[in-house]
Structures are given as C-alpha cells and as structure tokens.
Image (cartoon, rainbow over all chains, first blue to last red):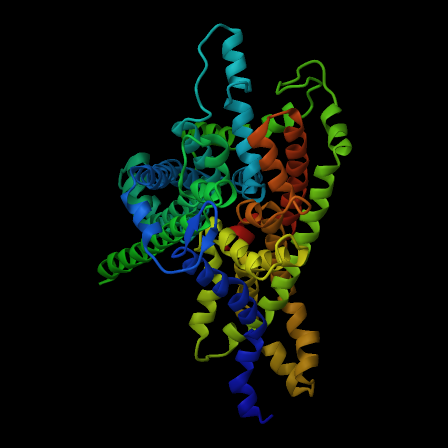
Length: 286
Length: 265
C-alpha cells in the first residue's frame, strides 16, 4: 500500500470492528424493533407481520397510556428540579472542602454510582418499607406508619438518590473552571454569602446545571429498577409497561410501539434542549 | 472567605446521611439472625451470608455476571482502541457519524436497548446464549471505554511517537512500545468502568437473561419483587463490599473525580 492510500484508508479499517459490532448489534435490532411496532398481535396466532399504525393508535387514544406517559414525564420533571435544588449547593460546598474531607465526601456521593441501582433501591425498601426500619420503629412507639412503598413520593425520593450524583458531577466540573476571584470581589464589595452564591456562582455554573438536567431527565424517564421495585404495578411508567408487555402479556408489537414513542420523546427532549442551550449561549457571548 | 459556613456544613452532613443511609441499612440488616428484615442490636449473625452459599443460584449468577462483565469489557476495548485512534488522529469522512454512533447507547433508554436485543436474538435464535449476551453488553459499555481511551489518545504527546519513527521503528513497534504504554491508563480506566457498568446492569439483562443464564442484578431484582427476606440484604451487602473495594482502588489509582468527572486535580 502506498503511504497516501494508507493514510486515506487507515481510519476506516481501524474503526471497522466497532462499526461492524454496532451495525449488527445495534442498528439491525433497532430497525427490527421499529418494524415490530407496526406488526399486530393475536392471543391465539401470536405475532402477525404486516404494516399498520394500530399499536400507535391504541397508545395515543387510551387514557391508561396517557396516565403512564404523564407519570413518566412528571417523575422526570420533579426529580430534575430536586436534583438542581439540592445538587447545585452541594457541588458548591464540595468544591470548597479540603482534603481529606473532600475525598471522603466524594466517595460517599459519587461512589454509589458504581453500586447497582437494584441494591440502592433495596436500601430504600429496607429503610422505608411497610415492614422497614423506620416504620417498625414508628409502630413500636405507637405512631402511624409513613407510606412510602407504592407511593409516587417514594419513587421520587429513591430516584433523586439514584440521579443526584450526575447533577453534582456536571455542576462540579464547571465549578472547577470558575475563578474564585469573582466571589472574592463580590464579597469585598459587601455582598452577603447567599448573594454571592445566587448572583455570582449560580450564573457561572448554568452550563453545568443544563447538561446535568438533561442527563437526569433522560435517565429518570427511562429508569426501570426503581419504579418497578418501589412503584410496583399500580404506578406504572413507560419502561415498566414495556417490561410487562414483553415478558408478561407477551404483546410484543404494542410494547415495541411504546418503546419507540419513549425513544422518540427522549430524543426530542435531548435535541430541543441542545438547541435551546446553543441559542441561549449564542446570545450570552455576543 | 472560601470556607463553608455552619449552615453549609449542616446541609452537607444531612446530604451525606441521605446518600449513605440506604446503603448502610442494607449492610446492617444483613447481619440479622432473624427470618425477616430487622436491624440487629445485640444478636448479630452471619446466618444470611451462609444462606447465600447454600442457595446455589446467587453464586452461579455471581460467576456469570463476572464472566460476562469481563468478556464484554474486553471485547468493547478491542473495538474501541483502534476506533479511538482513528477518531483522534484522522480527519476523515464519517468521523462525526462514527463518534455519535459509538456514544449513542448513552442516549437510548436501556429498556429500548433491552427489547431491541431480545427481538434480534429471538429472530436469529441466539437467546439464552452466553455469547449473545456478551455482544449485547459490549455495545452498551462501548461509550465508557471509548470516552476514556479517546481522552488519553487526544491528550498524548505525539513527539514520542515521531521520535521512535525517526529512529527507525516500524509502525507496529511504535504502537507496541510507545503508543500502547502511553494510552494504557486510559484503556484500563475505561475497561474498569465498562466492567462495573456491565456487572451492575439490570434493565438490558432483564430482557436477555434466561433461567439458566440469570445475572446477579436480575436474580436480585426477581427476588426483591417477590419477597424481601434478609438474603437480599446479605447478597446486596456483598455487592456493596466489593464495589467499595473497587471504588477505593480507583480513587487511589486515578481519583474518582478524574475518572467520573473528567477534571484534573
């Protein structure tokens, strides 16, 4: 091979193994799922190939599915909001800590990311479940139990616990680039600590808040383990509904249609959000 | 000036408590001698740890998850390293597309990946095979491997390579003796993250697992949705101990902030 030809073709054969893996194991499966969502299902005959929009029509016209998608979206919004309100000050505090407390705090806050979500959710069941530690304790001293399992509040609290490290990570990454002199300047001009935080720090970390929100929102709306374990069958979200359609009722085409709607919804949010960020920051930098 | 006030420290302490409490109670409850969820105060017992050993299912699942994570992370690394070299060093048609493709599993909900894999594996009759599961896991851990490898390739000083070539080393020797050792830390970091991601993964695995090939998180999940006996606590406690060991090693070697946040200390 001549050097020029080598240079021109090298990137292609270097990325070939990954490309083949993704073409076969990601692209083909996704296209097959898209096609599956247009098939129909019959309890006696099973899955029938064909092309029809009726699975989508079923989802769009049924209040049952409206409620599921609205709950999924609501969880996303509420969890994102709480992650901002708690995560931003926490990232700020973390950034001002010194060794060794900083390292210890860091292990406690982002270490859980490396522990299975199933384990973390189980922790909430053991802590707050009907026969969990808090409620048995309350019962022993004659107080009423706090409902947590099978409540939306329970799902939201556990989801915040799972998602908040992502917000802290994104905000913290931006905080490290913020010049501490800006804070000192504000303080020396007489600004109080809360004023410094809200008027000087927060505006500078908005890019981190925006990217953290996007991660938290998209992971919350596609979360499975936590809504399945804590929310159960009564508080279904999109992902647990898809699970039931695939593994319990075996209505694969309907499940595939719900999955495609969820995928498109999340993609739309991601693209719209990025567009928004670009536009906002274009204005800022003009 | 740049110190946390008392209010900030109270907030911080409460937040750490919120993060730690659910994990701490799992470990605490796992030492109960009783047959139901209870926090032991005077009687501690390893009963539920012995129970793990007696129920072969969890042990079998543990080895499966370990093997699966090892194979998937390795396969992913083998595909990611050359791709990272191509993306970092060449300006070619389709470069942006390839990068977006390799990172796309981060944007696709796991449940969608799960059913897509299930659909595909059913169609070509490889459901319930170990190799099928390895291929699926290799796809969704790819972003983690690629990001860290890419970062180390981009951050690498190319003078060393040029020196090797000018001294007469062949392309292969240059890669093996110069490039490879320099990007090794990034590759190892990416491999470890991929390993952990695969080992912990539930949502994709729940669809592609079969009764004879049930990964540890899936077995735990199935157990929790049926009953909550203290065995789920002892299994989870073992997972917490192992994860904690890995977390502390990573913190020593790389720094968690550098590995997960991407900042320099």
